[in-house]
Length: 323
Image (cartoon, rainbow, N blue to C red; front, side, top):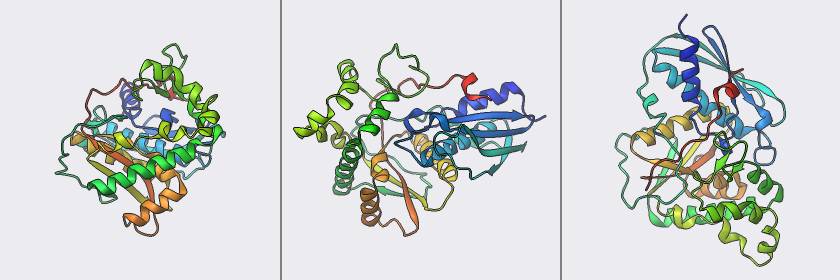
């Protein structure tokens, strides 16, 4: 047998460090000897924010790539077979991939699994060093006017998406702003990860639910959704695109490697999800930056050198991840 239960569990925990939408962590693992299976728990899916399950599949793809890398640290190779199963919310557990193990080589990128993190704040005022960048599925945007345009369009898209009350309620449901929340430290988005002060964390649920219509009436909601000032501290914005018909799990695997490659260069990332989720800004961005026809903008990511330490990651315990 190539893999022990102990090594399997260690690899599952390392794979769980991968980024997932709203930190939902939908990946679940089953082991049968040297055969592993990855499932998506669609019951933790976002019924409003991700009704087709595309982001859930993207998230599972990131975890899948992290698992392949974690296994490689033990000289174990994984042959991956994707199921191409629908991951829309509310279906329970659905199979995403099956892995067959054999002896293999180490992929040094696995060393970045612990160093990669999301930085939702301003970046250091210093240029980035991109020597060694290998991605051919990104447009890198450096010049200030283009970054300013992306910052403005991202704010526009965020505000448009936030106008939907059901989306705001779902967002609040995944916030763990109170340290006494029963899921604090396990999943979702906490105060530290979002760089909120105590007063901001206290007010956020009320602002996003009860007070939003009133604030909107007085045209105060745009500045609440604005990130432009922090966005412009990022010296480079990466526009990550893939074939529009590609299995989202494959796109997720590529996205994981992109993030780890950036981490190897000392960079942290902050996704601009609204830019690709809003149909209008998706089209505008593809046209402005020459993303080829037949390609889909999967994600725009602000990259830079963080100005502080990584926040403690909220991660599900092992017993919630294994089946």
